Length: 88
Image (cartoon, rainbow, N blue to C red; front, side, top):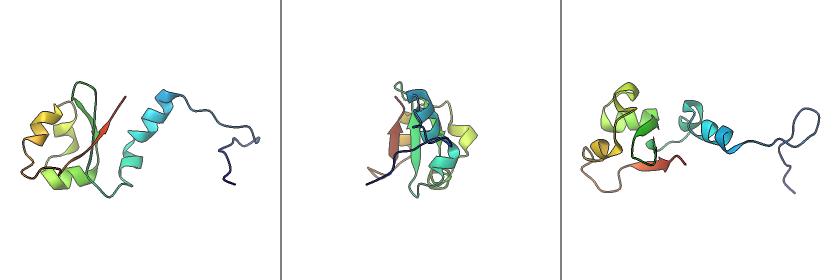
């Protein structure tokens, strides 16, 4: 049976939705994913990418963060080339 995450004292750890979101959007986590990932807000604003996205589209992270994902998708010539992670 899988073990539940626990603290050093054996107590169960509880993460807030905000903490989970921060972990999922962390560059350390995103860099472990072999696919290009673009995390966007509900309005389509890019909030995080990984290095695979930089290599795929030829833009640096700083050039994309804060831009609308629509502008990035217009660069894609093949349907389905982007993997988008939606930030809730």
